[in-house]
Image (cartoon, rainbow over all chains, first blue to last red):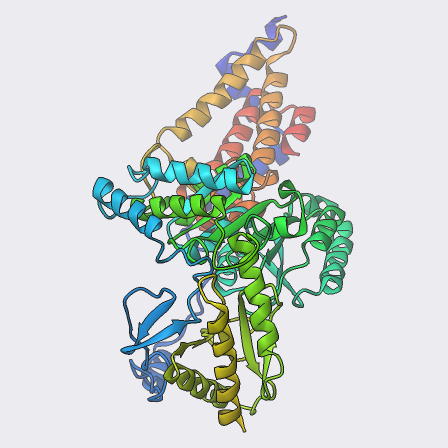
Length: 482
Length: 129
């Protein structure tokens, strides 16, 4: 192929350079100049800060007034006047030196003081010591952790479970592990603070729907569908989630799970169910709101609960399909970067699970009801007893063991309401009924619920005690509010 | 950033073009492409140079300016999901060394191509476009 004229000898090539067309050479010249400019240009960031002159900077510094390090706080701020509990917060607690019946701790199944649980914890303490001194990936995984995960998965009838060492961090780590920037989360307005922090950490688009209002949620989902049709390529990569709680802590109501599952399949969103209050409470065997409604657990993509309520341990767990839960082992921030659950608490939780599975008959009832049925009865009883108090209304379903008493008519200012309710609580405490107000970080909550007294029913309270509590609250409310 | 060590680099994609030996590998890869094209028997040398230039430009365009996001999960909650690799490089700082290098190589390649095609007209059109 090489004829004499087509030989690529260097001399010939340089000759060709001289014969090159003019425009080409000019273009090359321009390009060389551009290279030189590039080589000498400085690196800079895209968003430049605005440059203030020295005089403007001085002015700004002059104007600045430092805020006090400690802002002025009223003397009766609740954080400054706390009640001191001596001993465990079990059925009969000693608050401020006075023995009261505990209507404030979330000890639904009475497992806090259970001798079997305590014995298991002590045995584990003798074997493992107190703490684990490491996260799960760094020699912090003990056989009790794997055991507990196994047992929880079997109890909830899911494929796998994962344990976190702090209940608040459970849902706050689980949400940002799956939902990122650009994803859409539909969440209830009455979601608890932990969920709100998880959503904030996830940086996704949050769409709030009215509490337990499925019509509102469907409206939002439809709007999102219309948006998706305008830009199908983007819609294919955005993930959609619905985050609900089984039993809401702020309102004591149950989420309408069957409708949610229908909406999930219609609009292709994933459901994250937070079962902190309903685990060990709802359902025939205590498996939570899915058992309560008889829904197949595979319909829910992720169930998250904390073990600090019914299970009387510390920490939390998530359970679901294997490939969902496995993702959290590397992406769950609370899992990877916090020390794991102390083994004695894991052993206590395993023993508590044993008790829950055995479902012992409790209290003196004629027919042998398990603890969950007994708890349901007691909730119903106290709900009925507390209806019709003048000035206070009961907020929450009759199935919920943690419900609220709110003022029927607010005085207009939140502080005044809080003070009134605190009066009621103090007087009840004098008559040895320990109650508490529901506390919120008022500036941080997205939808702040009205102030209320939170009443908790446990399996250990006898009928007489429930009646006594109801009548005490009635008398005190009459005295304070009228 | 070394592989396998703990680092605070949220998105490793930003530092890929700064890693050791990547510039050399890049130049060698272009050379390899050129040699492979040269070994096709019936194609003449200027066409090969033009082809190298074209394929290189198209490939870099796809990888740097078209494909968005990262091939791995990053702990930055998806901030880089909508950015191309060019935008991700060095966290958006302009005119860093890598960026300058990657801007200059197509130009140098263009020079070489023009040289070897003896400034022929058709080749010129193709290459400039």
